[in-house]
Amino acid sequence: MVDFAEHRKALLCNDAQSIADYESAMGEATKAVAAWLQNDKMYTGGSIKELRSAIAFNPSKEGLGVHKALERMVELFLNKSLKVHHPHSLAHLHCPTMVTSQIAEVLINATNQSMDSWDQSPAGSLMEVQLIDWLRQKVGYGAGQAGVFTSGGTQSNLMGVLLARDACISKNWKDENGNPWSVQRDGIPADAMRNVKVICSENAHFSVQKNMAMMGMGFQSVVTVPVNENAQMDADALEKTMAHLQAEGKIVACVVATAGTTDAGAIDPLKKIREITNKYSAWMHIDAAWGGALILSNDYRSMLDGIELSDSVTLDFHKHYFQTISCGAFLLKDEANYRFMHYEAEYLNSAYDEEHGVPNLVSKSLQTTRRFDALKLWMTVESLGEELYGSVIDHGVDLTRDVAAYINATEGLEMLVDPQFASVLFRVVPVGYPVELLDTLNQNVADELFARGEANIGVTKVGNVQSLKMTTLSPVATLENVQSLLNLVLAEADRIKDAIADGTYTPAID
Image (cartoon, rainbow, N blue to C red; front, top):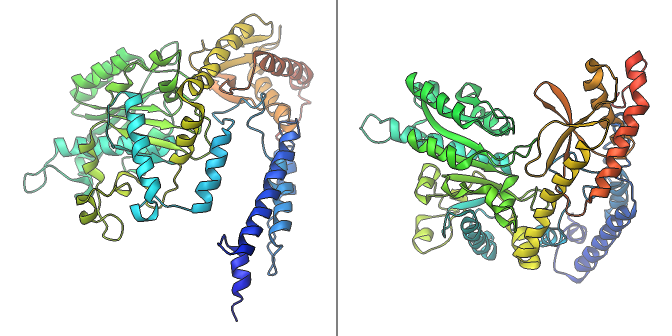
């Protein structure tokens, strides 16, 4: 026999007991988070070996109940989680989060609105449309509704190259009736598979290749061009590449420019790239997943000059906008280009509804069921105001420049790329240390500091050189915080360098 009382206890319902249970459990959860925040250690989970031995999934038939399950999650997950707000957590584009974003998450989760039809999220649908309009104007596209919130940069980039490819094929291929080819209806023509190309820089996000592979075009469809000494796309190399491809009978559907590369934070020469793509009638998509935060900058907005000239753009708010994951957006300059993915389902977005002005967001998205993540950005913008939001964003850029100056002046440290946005690429170079061991030393310095919970710094490559990386986007990190972190880096390098040199060192990751 069904015990509805127990069912209701497990759900968020409107009876008095359910509300009381919700308030109690949520109160316990927020107290647990508050206690976790009071621990000054950046990370307490230990090495991957230690963590793996501590984590086990052991469900029972009887269940633990909410309170004991929460206690277990605090011990198993919360207390072993990285503190992204910590000033020594600077490895990735992994940001501290706005309190407004955390509050909005409570409202999003409690209401469980889905953005795939207006009648599943009445207010949310209208709010998202307004926020897209505001973002379009900030980018320089002008007013309009062509755009949608996404899970993040990879999905937004997928939409850019997908629409660019389908627009290209529609323009250059005809079906058996002499009409523009529809990839949505008829698939990809065989010769288009071989001849349609997408270009990006060698420093572009891996999602360009990943997305083209998922679209059935394969890695072969992506042509990379070199970068200059500042890690930006080489515009001369781009023009030569496009001319070469044209001479070979290839068609460039899209050039993906990057505004804020993952490692160097480099912003490609947007205006020059637009000039070149116009010459060859190619779509220009800008991956501004990171650098797009500068549309709100008080001091550095000019770094994005030319973004308004693009055909589409990726924005990602769970990076330098400090929103909780996930929260991104795709903006499309010309709404007519949405025709390449338009779809109607009577049970979601009928033609009748559209004729009467009902928002059709599902046809603008690759997702069907989708969270109302736009609420997080809406609430943050309204709470902070544009000026304070801009200041929070600008701090990371300012800090980067100060950190670079400090590294250049410090013995034993070396800058590898001049900083641009909010990223610092550097390495440890002890005086007299064998050059062939520097890569191993730098890799293990990062691993050691993370395993002990002292710091999280990134590890990447600059050319063939092993590099350490700090993503200095945190609004609460100071130069003194970073100096303290760099002192830890130098001390750790000094501690392990001899053991590495004589072959007695055991890596922390093992």
